Length: 342
Image (cartoon, rainbow, N blue to C red; front, side, top):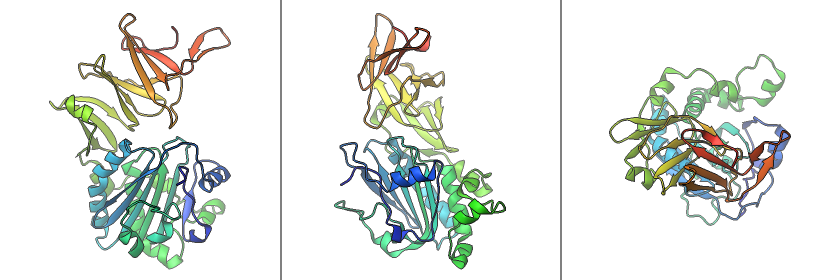
């Protein structure tokens, strides 16, 4: 199986709207080109409730997006039923695990099987296709690095409440040509996702959910993760809030000091010390982690510093002023934060 991005057969693209946040031609080429850069298989999983089927594709089984989506699935289903208990929804989340910035969103109303990606899915995977093959309704495809609840609920609410218009016009909810050539056409995917949340959406965002299947490490350290207001909270079992994040990329542990490095992206992190305290300050690497990179953490008792390395490599770069910049590694300690020199 190709390990690259999915392709969508041209003859299947009917009544759809794709809004790109990058140059359209670049995204087009990326979507329709098979990439085989990394030797691993994409991981698929299905979450099905009474009114929604969520197909999740992540780059690695350990992706925290899986637990986040599992945690949200029930309230997404309840949200749909509160708007219209007769409607079915098909959501496909494609994790941009290589940080390619696809930022693709698609919304349509039609048979679910017409929008299944990639073409030929489920390959050799055991995957129950009965819901997809027999139902129709609102289709939503999101290809982004992080799963966020608020924009999804906005799209769901708009789609479910405007289905009659879409069916009557035989078009998408968002008309590409109108958006491009008619300045009076203000309804776009961006405008919906960036609009003020409705009372209904706010009600569901306020619900406090405990993360399903959290990393064992956090459980052992008496840390719970809760989801609320589209944010991620690290909370001690005694109720004390340790850290609040908007996104969560990975959790890294240094066993020599019993400390945690919580990455909110592939280029930044937060620190939780052995006393389960955090100053909630974001620190930046001098590098970016790609989908094939691992963060290596070593602690020097002599210097009382951590060395954070990208893939274990050591490359030193000197800027035009002769200042040493560590391109693939940095030092870190609580007192001084990130430093670039030996």
